[in-house]
Amino acid sequence: MANAAEYRRGRHIVSALHAHLVFVTKYRWNVFDDAMLRRCEDIMVEVCDSFAAELREFNGEDDHVHLLLRCPPKVSISRPVHSLKGVSSHYLRKEFTGRVNRAIMHGHFWSPSYFAASCGGAPLTIIKACIEQQRRPA
Image 1 (cartoon, one colour):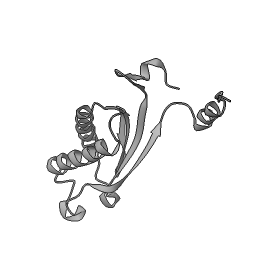
Image 2 (tube, rainbow, N blue to C red; image 1 turned 45 degrees about the horizontal axis):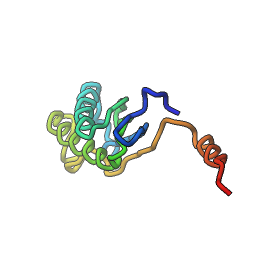
Image 3 (cartoon, one colour; image 1 turned 120 degrees about the horizontal axis):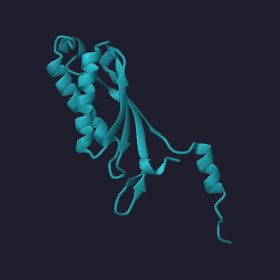
């Protein structure tokens, strides 16, 4: 399980929700360079702040980026994903027009799909064992 510092505390909830996200560029075009990845990270930090989420890690390669988000329990993961992709696409296409040829990418930056996985905490086998060992009343 996460240590006490990893828990997000609210009035009626204690949570430790993290998501690993992967966004791929449209047609897997190799458009990223270091400056573009740095700007993408800055944009995504701002978007996360607007959802009370925290971008814990960010990195990428030529054609995709990986994000580790710490999310509040009241936010469905699809909402920040939609904003992260939409806002970053807008600014990256605007600021890096030379690298992102709109004609080739047909006005899009990201592929419409994405990868999302919950992460952190105990492995599923331990969680299952814990649930199985509960003392059920007779």
